[in-house]
Image (cartoon, rainbow, N blue to C red; front, side, top):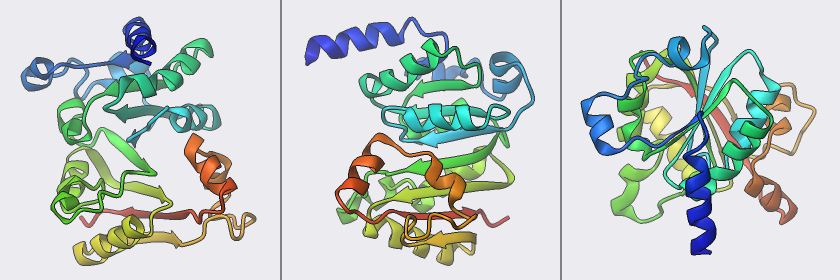
Length: 225
């Protein structure tokens, strides 16, 4: 297992669309901060990011479904991200990138109003009370998203966790944010036009949980101005 991880770390380093900034780069100023469109993607298309992208298959599938958008997967585990990075490299996708880092640092990677959309897919619920601030929809993370989202930018959440889903609804309500759509059983009505695009793309674990009978929740919201 350790050898395979090392091999994946080494291969990640060969991908031109895979970034692993060290702390010095983040503190001194990441080279693509505020310049992702101009200096990496080479276009003016909207940028979507996936927080906690895991294997990266969701990021890659979104890039295939929406070729006129740019997608960046973010996770702290490089060996896991390797799969999406390798697939997108083999498929020569020009609208995909991956950044290995902690999500807390997104303000050091992206400039103000650089991001159009955020996807949070099956995050760790962090059930222990002292770790509420670690949840990707906590007030602390909401403020980090505010730093990089364009006005009117949308945040999507897909989760199998009742805890995380309920917590996020409370955060939206308490913060005065705009809940755009909410579905506590995403796959109950697959013909619903509101969810058709959302269920077309699934993560690796989403497929497993669906086979096991888990209920998937989905919501999207816009931050209070």
